[in-house]
Length: 107
Length: 121
View 1 (tube, rainbow over the protein chains, first blue to last red):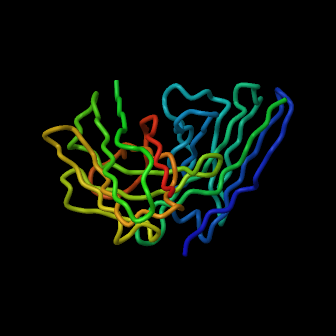
View 2 (cartoon, rainbow over the protein chains, first blue to last red):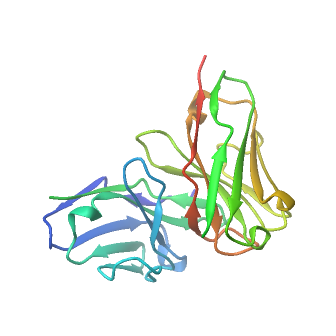
């Protein structure tokens, strides 16, 4: 079955670049989307279709997808970017698949 | 503004049934597919099910297939999840989420706040 793997945690200092990765078989042949979830809140879409940013999402958020790995990059991370981040894609039967999530700490 | 609110959660014994609802507003409900996604408290997100805009196509995660049924009533701008044969591992916060297209699962751009289902004896 199709699975997406994320590292459990990433930690950076404010102003640094945070990279959160998501790996899966032939992931670049599918779109990867990214969601930010802060404690006690519903997830929010931050990147869709690998590298597109919804309106209202800061320009410091960007995405890429190549080979078996998609990457969410936050250039100049802010304290308020601290949250859980999930990648999302679909399997060959069009069923949704989430990565296990990465806890980003910006301190 | 897009708004969705889930309801129907609660405490239920293993083997029991429960029906979740999601009331939507602020968009043309029947133009979009809809999903259910769940999250065990303190754990990650799990995709559960999808239904197309007209209700003609449905998809399920293996973990719920045969036990859960997704449906919608476009006249009421409402989405449902009928859950039967509930197990303790179904305990989670259940979110409804709006897809960006009509026919097949793609990705979600809006979510409700969720409703908590607890399966416990």
